[in-house]
Length: 302
Ligand SMILES: [Mg+2]
Image 1 (cartoon, rainbow, N blue to C red):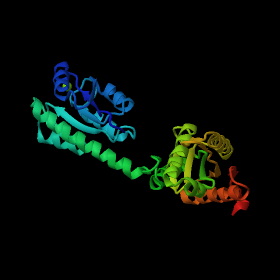
Image 2 (image 1 turned 180 degrees about the horizontal axis):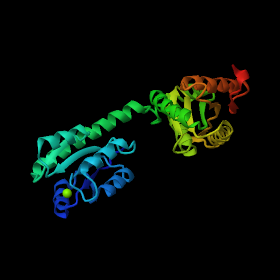
Image 3 (image 1 turned 45 degrees about the vertical axis):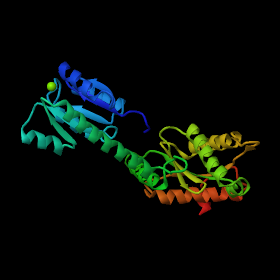
Image 4 (image 1 turned 180 degrees about the vertical axis):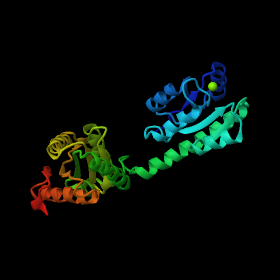
């Protein structure tokens, strides 16, 4: 999600329509094309397109079916669908809109109207995505925020319950962070938080969910990871934090972190806060035992 142009997928089996739509939309978005429903579904997912202009009469399946599958796939359900079609009954139009399409443009189309309608929907789509980004992200560091972590971890624990997969959770706290702020000021403190977030991102897997819990505390959910594998990952992360100093004008700042972690048994509790508390107890012990270390939750921590 950035300043780069959004991508529109044009799904149309008549080459002449592809040509005229691409002429109309040139410059408003990156354009890509599919001439069958199957191709459309594959491209929409692979290219993470923002919008699909969808013909209804396609050689292999109807545009309605393509729309339904786009809306049922978590990877594509957010893309904005606009039907562009020669089917002009009100019933067809209502059906298309009911399926989640945002607009319905009838052929033969007027180029200016198509351009304006697409632009309006694109603006809405991008505004919505920006809002979504703001509501899920910690402003200072760009990591997920705590509320989003809770949402996504709750979904993950439900999945865990159904499939009985191992999951682990970590709490990470920067050691003596107050001293960083007191010694160098808050702007260096902010930079230090961002520095730590970068190290975490570089060390975690794409599937790990990493969020700023608050202050200098971060939480990480590790799907399909048992506690001993999570402990190894935490130790690697701790070492990388210790060994990657932050450059200041005339010296270097060495951050250190303590990490508490817990394996999750979602059969026992599917409440993420319950497990964060366990990880937090382990973190407390890591602090007590001298900081800059990883501690795995044990029942005696209760
Ligand atoms: Mg067609």
